[in-house]
Length: 377
Image (cartoon, rainbow, N blue to C red; front, side):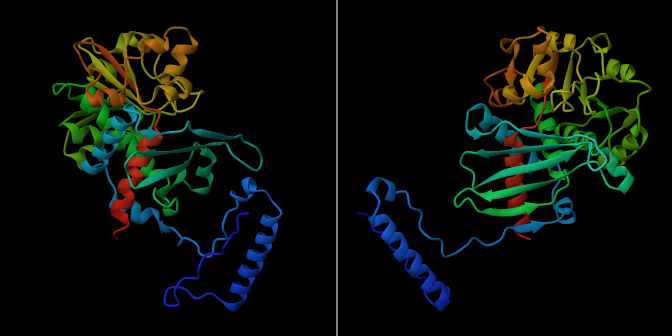
């Protein structure tokens, strides 16, 4: 018969246990002993000891602190690049994202909630992220349409270390860092005319990311906000930005095209693309209802996914598979394979599409960077 013995109390100088708590633990211990005595050894071996202590609460980092201390820089880009490389080697545990759709009613929505996470092998933390997007009625409350939190967890103890109230800032940051990785490995040094279709928060991080790779000449197009975007980015980056009168005009002059729109409809056409070769870095499709890139462009491209198991379900690849225009065998590579040098990037005057749906590997990487920097404050 296995006998359960309560843990010894900690020294008085580190922890004081009240008399009533001690009596309660003893009573529970005797009850468990009596119960185990009536049970078989096989069932007794699974009894969980009574916990007499708890983890300290996680630190809370507010939006102001996060935005003041994190940005697109070498640390974030290098961390995300390394995460992609580890992902391609099978060294990252990344579950499929969870999606919760909030339909519009008199008391809710519309909106979407995405839950992602991951663990990069050999790192001291892992991350779980909740991101809420497309809550468009928030404008009536003078609030942004998106929000979110990162939870960074100790990979040794499993205890949450920090809660980052980032309101999608860290999500946009890691998306921008992925854009930098894609530009670094899937374009050439001479491809410096960079177009941005969609000029919201993600576009700004994509512009910062592109500028971190090499000096660029930016071209912007959006239904709304392109002029302000171009003005702000030129002032911030010290690089020229112009506004195109149409998406077609942007595409005809661009060597690299970043697309970051709501994904309700395709944003370019194959006949518009630069015949000298173009790299399209698409980040607007992250659920089955979205598509930015036409199927004929996908079919004609050297297609590179951030993670095939995601892009085939919620990314641009999904639409081409559904239409029968592509098969999984037509995928050239995952981005991490290009990072690792096991698959090629640009080779000549080809169309490359890099499909960024956002992975838990990126979240884990940016979570580690955030904890490393902010936990020291």
